[in-house]
Image (cartoon, rainbow, N blue to C red; front, side, top):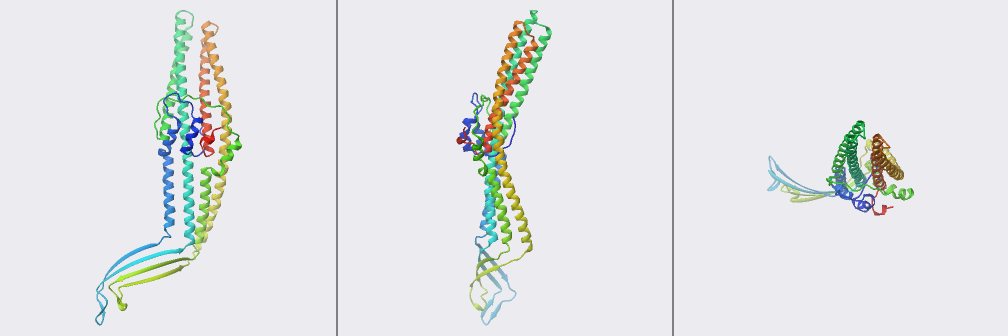
Length: 428
């Protein structure tokens, strides 16, 4: 099946759409939603996105606490060579002990305020990226799931083809023994049995490969069996409705918006480093070196205004300003790409509906041709080569029908994922 590229998918929203998208369950393979739920927990990309989000949250907290008060305690022991006295009053002892309690706080720092805003926007962008990643993980799981279903359907068709070939071989052998069939017909029948076994072997490999891909991407081992693959041919809602639901609400677009705003705040923070800062501080000293004050405890309060001119801040601010312009362009690009994904996915579904209808009509015609060829061969009015050709066409038609239905089911899911949702409201 084709592998196009939409984006994110929340688990709660998936549960509503499964009834629409999942085929009717006939055997033991679980429905789609348990695999999606497992992928949100176990998929590598989803776990990495959560780790990046946690990192961005910590960075935002770090930027905030930089403006919080800082407290300090310092103890100092000093061994003086000589003590100092004035009369009988000790000014500086030989063994001097000092304890300093300090508190400092920045009251005004525009640059740090801007950096706080930038880290907040970066965290929001990481959150949106995590949502977009979940949608992409869901898209991969949906693709893997329907590949399993399609591979199982092809395997069933291959087994039926092999069984038919074995019956044909038995029938041709009986006719040859009775003198009504040529040895060439028997050889062709034997070749068709061998070809049928090859088809079963190839289909078995595809089943194993698709199941392994589903297990790797979802973190859940699929059960044996498969649902019946029968796609709904109902048209989707008009394209305008789908386009109205995408746009700026898509997680990838929101992430680009937040990243652009974060870049702008970073540029502002760099330029704001040229502005003065205001900080206050307090210190209390406890000592046995009382000096002439004769006080063991003394405090001091400070207020500091600092202004630093650094030409590199101007250059760096301009560079970050250019980066912010580039981020805004990426935002516009993300918005256009989100609309294009919906547009292409909608038209793909419409084309896949036509393909599925054509594949079903072709399958019906090929199956009828195979039945007629067998009947004519049994009646002696057709050659066994006619039977072989018709049955090959019938198998190819069934594979085409399976491929078309699988692509249609996947296409409907990708349309919803491209729109940024996958819930009950998405049902046509």
